Image 1: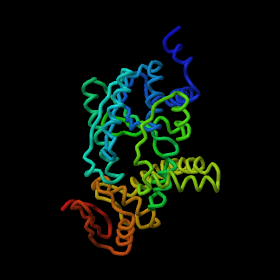
Image 2: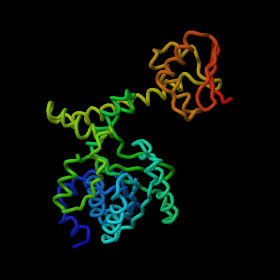
Image 3: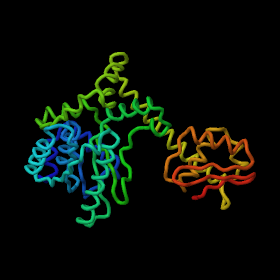
Image 4: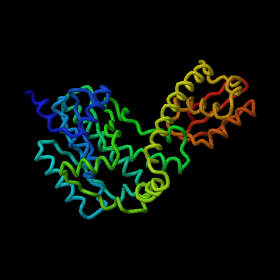
Length: 335
C-alpha cells in the first residue's frame, strides 16, 4: 500500500472535505508547492497546520511554520517556545518574529506587521529553495468572513469591502496568500482540534471586548444567531454574491474606462453622460494608474461633480498629484 493511501485511512471528514476543495481548485495549492503556514496557536491555525501536514504526502508539499509574537500578554514568549517545540516534534521548520508592542497598538497595525513579516520570510525561503512561487497560508474561516462583513458594513465600506474574503490573492511577486479553510466554520475547527487532541494556545486578548472584532465575535453574531439561526451562513452567501457582483462591476468598469480614455486623457463629454456613481468609478480607475493613495468616496463625488459643472478646473490630490481638466479632456499629473 502506498504512503498516500495508508495516510488517507486515518483521515477525518474534515481532511476529505479539504482534499475535495483542493482537487476542485487545482490552482489553490498545487502539487509540490512550498508552503509557509501562519500559526498563532489558536484553534483555526492549529487546525490548518494539522490538516495541511496530514495532506502533504498526498500533494508532495514542503511546509514550514511562521509565528508572530505580538507581545500583547505576559505568556506570549512561552507560547512561542511551546509552539516551536510542537512543530519540531513533527519535523516542521519553525520561524518566528517578535513585535515591539508599542508599534502595533491597533488591529490594523498588527495585521500590517504580520503580513510584512510573512512576506519577508516567504521571500527569503523562495530564494533559498529556488522556487518559482511560494504559498503563504492563513487559518481564516467562514466565521471570519461573516465578522469582516459586519465590521466593513458598520464602517461604511464600498462594494469590495462587502465582498467575501478571497481564498487566493497575490501577496507579492511570486508569493500567494491562500486561505484554504474558508470552507469551515470556527465551530468546525474547534471540533477538529478536540477530536484529534490538538493543543491550542488561546490568546487571552481574544476576550478583550475593546477590540472590535472580539465584540462582533462574542456579542453581535451570537445575538443575531439567537434571532435568526443560521444568519452567519446567510451573511457569507450574501458576501459571496457581492464578490461576484464586484467582479462583474470591475469588468464593466474596465470596458467603460477604455471607452472614455485615449492618448490625451479621459474624454470629458463621454464621462459626463454617465450617472454620478459611474463617473466616480471611472475617475477612481483613472487615478489608480497614477496615484497609489486611495481617494475617499466623498472626494471622488466632489471631483466628479466639479468636472461635470465646470468647463475648466484643477483640484489637488494626495501625494503631490493634481487633476486638471478643460472642456474636452481630464488629466492627472504630479507637481
